[in-house]
Length: 259
Ligand SMILES: Nc1ncnc2c1ncn2[C@@H]1O[C@H](COP(=O)(O)OP(=O)(O)OP(=O)(O)O)[C@@H](O)[C@H]1O
Image 1 (cartoon, helix red, strand yellow):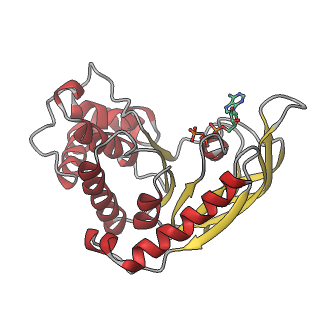
Image 2 (tube, helix red, strand yellow):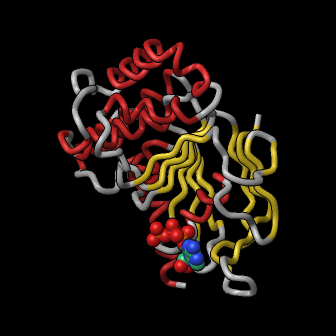
């Protein structure tokens, strides 16, 4: 089954203005993990906005779950570079938030609060945050905040998770820990992932398929399947195989820069 489909999508933010992305066609299978990489300004965030229904294509069509996107999508989980946790809510209450907003959970909240809380605690424990439920975001490290943010994006069991540079602000060690965490969550209970990142190692480590976008206007210039079996281990990132995959992506980006 196909979860996301772009059919010859172009977008100009201003009528008659320059295209931000041009003629993008791609398809993401259910439970596939894709990464989109490219130089700054190539339209990665624009792709995210199109999938989540925050903006409409100027030309072409975007489908999510077999339906053409028309307006904001509620059944998508999202996480960004800034964790965007609400500072006045505890970790637990931040993770509860989507259940208070998204149906059918919202109508069940009054009767099911205890069960929902247990589910949040369980998810927090799975990402290593047990014992931090009652802390406020400013009492957590950056990596812990990002773990909580990913829990919040997944608590309502969306079919599609969209990640926009989620680990971009973290140090290299924390980043790698979070790659492993994300892979575990995804393997335990699969969902479709679209990851936007500048980090070619991150894209290679995590994704089944990596798409490379050129800049101004963003066009797909390469699609690379990463064949490594899962679960992938960090040791793999020290091998020649891994370096070769990353290098191949880097060459595509290099060519874009030169042109
Ligand atoms: N709301 C907007 N109005 C007008 N132009 C926009 C808007 N958002 C983005 N753009 C333009 O569209 C192009 C693609 O931007 P986008 O933010 O999608 O790129 P990006 O690849 O995510 O960049 P970065 O990696 O720097 O975050 C850029 O030229 C940008 O200036």
